[in-house]
Length: 222
Image (cartoon, rainbow, N blue to C red; front, side, top):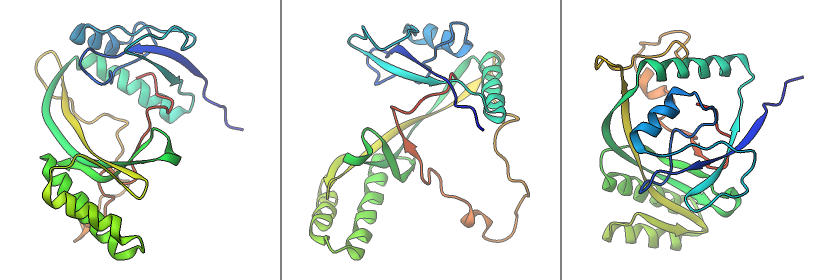
């Protein structure tokens, strides 16, 4: 029988002017937490419940790792946060995600977040809706959305009950005290057998394929 990972609800205060903190944690000694507090002046206050959460605060459910592989990845991330305490921001990338009523606050990525400018993501969404219109009976709303994307710089629209949004994501690299860039970690996934055959790259899973962003899902401590 597999053990159920324990969870704890904590309150995390988001950074002023930023939608939320990507380094929210519960353990007072976490290096990444301290680095985040120094960089942004934010606070990460642990609590037993979400009662008393004020403006700018949101409940965060943290799942403590008990599986050996996941626990090893958590420990590896903790060591990396100690070794590499600075960040170098590369810049934003853009993609498209969808949200529907059945999925709550979850977003599902349908256009990989790998485009260099917002219009490239809009063009990819245009193509996605066009091909959907060719295969579905409800063509009129889909074609209307395609026509709108061809005329306007639309970042969000709803078609047949599905909300589409152009999303922005920052890329960054971690640096150590001497300016060295973080290299792959021992627990990063690798192919079991290298494949250098022709077309191997095309057969690989697409970037962000099946990725779901769920703000209500339990987070790991790191």
